[in-house]
Amino acid sequence: SCSSKIFGSDAGSEWQLQALRMEHDAVDMRCLETEHLIKEKMKHLKAGRDRLRREQAQLQEMQQTVRERQRAQEERQRQEQTQLAAATQQHALQQELSYESHLQ
Image (cartoon, rainbow, N blue to C red; front, side):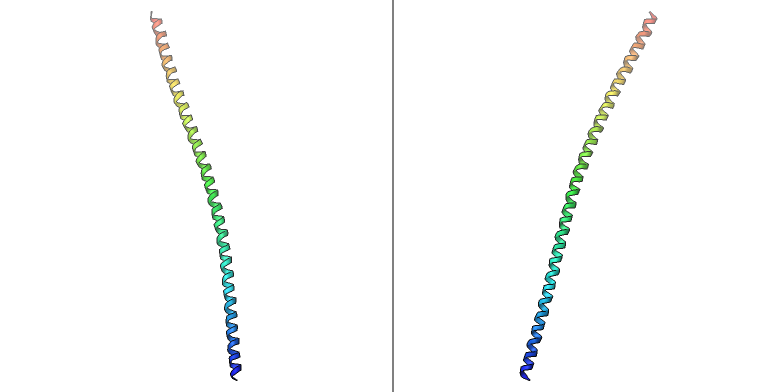
């Protein structure tokens, strides 16, 4: 009677220990899976960050090109306006000289 009680108690403890080991293994497995998922997510986020940085650099380059073209266009317009003003002034002088020569 006494030995069966001890045996039963030992068997119960062994079963509990085995159950705890299995639970511990399951927790370890879930931790490993979670770590793997976190690493994959980090890799994905870093790739996305790198892609966004490249896109940002491309957009900044495009913006710089547009600004340079805009400045060049503005400079051409200023030159055309200056040439037009000079031509208009030249034409006015010619008209005035022509008028004066007719008077004489």
